[in-house]
Amino acid sequence: MSDYSSSAEGSSELEIVFADVAKVSHSPPRSPLSLHSHDDLSSIEKEWYEEVRETVLNLAPKLQEISDQIFENPELGGKEHLACRLLNEELSRNGFQIETNPAGLETAFVATYESSEFNESSRVIAFFTEYDALPDIGHACGHHLIAVGAIASAVATKSVMEKMDLHGIVQVIGSPDEEGSGGKIELINAGYVKYPDVCLIAHPGNQDNAFMRTSALQGVTAHYYGKAAHAAINPWEGMNALDAVVQGYQAIAMYRQQMFPNTQVHGVISDGGSRANVIPKHASASYELRAETKAGLAQFKSKITDVFEGVVQSTGCQLRLLWDSMFAEMRTNALLASQYQRYMEALYDVEFATQEKQQAKVIASTDMGNVSHVKPSIHPMYSIGIDDTCSLHTKAFRTACQAPAAHERTWRAAVGLAMVALKVLSDDNYFERVLENFNTNE
Image (cartoon, rainbow, N blue to C red; front, side):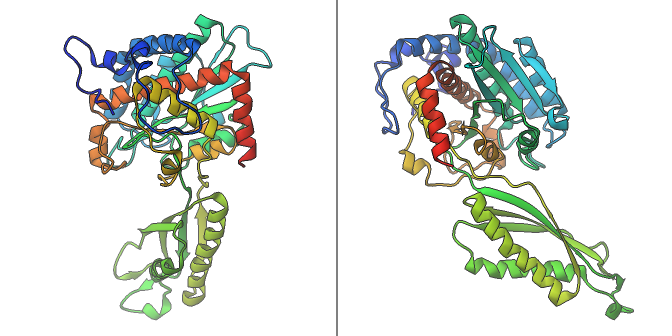
């Protein structure tokens, strides 16, 4: 893969990132074929690219300022007030109408551009964005890059629509707390995902993967309630809730021997009491369960529930389980993903593994998986120019997310998503195949 972080003398880094399409059209893609052949771009695609490229180049300086502000002021899920305001202001400045507090979420938004000739046959594109940070290590998942990348894609798509008289609607859906409760789930439940025809997002990472695969996930907190007593004077009158939590933790550890390879459970003791000389009347532990699919997770959840309830029988404590919303596995739309891959290969010579290899590894979990069960969706990962040993959610990845290469690769991915959006808006036959793929792979 070309190293876009070192620019040739006399050329800006961004100009090298957006290499002339005339130049790349003579350079065949180096990665293997996937669902589509990687012929040169059509004449209309070259026209799209020139307008998309120019728009993103113009937006990049301002968007990087916004990205830097979000990075330097990390906000946890549900509290992303600065990020939300900055993104809304930029989208409004670029002609989008802003709806605030959708689904009652203070830091969610829906920004919409509707073409003048929109009609029943026109299509709706939704670019999803995220902007919440992680506790303690801030933006070590690169959500500040996702935030501005989605704006770049949406505004560039809008620009082509206006210039070439394409009809449709472009939305940017701001979804808070991806790292926690999953804002997209609440937006789905409130009906905000029933309008888009396709949903797109791109995530920074340590590899290029158009067919990113994620696992289903659900969090749970197990609360045990016993009876307090003095640990030295009358311990026989107590009922130790911490013992119940520890017994449950150990029982789950022993159960791991019988777990299927595609299931995982990990947890921490979140409340173990307050004083050593008082038998705790309440204690709790928080866990996350993962499985390959929603169906597999439901079965796994039943087994783990049995473990928790077994502790009740042996300790006499009462149990209360508080389950978080379930994150579904990602159902990547193969037609959309292969088109994104085709554009990234043709425009930037990005190298991808075969589709089979891309889908072989499960990469974490996301509430975008829930979106993908409602509408045709993709969630590609794009490399920010780091080694694949540099993992997300680490200080090293956070540092890499603020390097010049990270923003440059974000603009490339934004171009790729915009090109996919334009393909959906303009090609009826292609869109029908996207829907067919979605409907036949439920």
